[in-house]
Image (cartoon, rainbow, N blue to C red; front, side):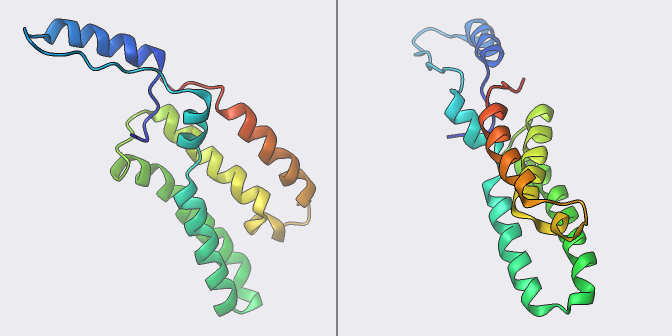
Length: 145
């Protein structure tokens, strides 16, 4: 399964291209738009969230408390930048809207986990606990084009 979202518009576009390029004897490949569940899995950059959690856990054990704030924000920034790069280079996702949604997904997951946000005075874990399921339920409604 490809990581790129397949939308209704993509199916129409592929159908037109396929009809124009069809040669005698070729069988047509039947594609369908991604379902809600497919989009949900494709929008959440699970590999990057898992990598972030792992590296953060290791760094917290190896770092003094005074350096933790800068380290956590730096680590968050690095993984946020890696999110679209990973999707583009490794997963071959070409849709800009999907890159934006996945990057926002990463931010929401880190916020819910605490991450560097937990070091801020205004942070309340309840906000993350409410935001994560609301975001997860609603994000897959969007069909990236």
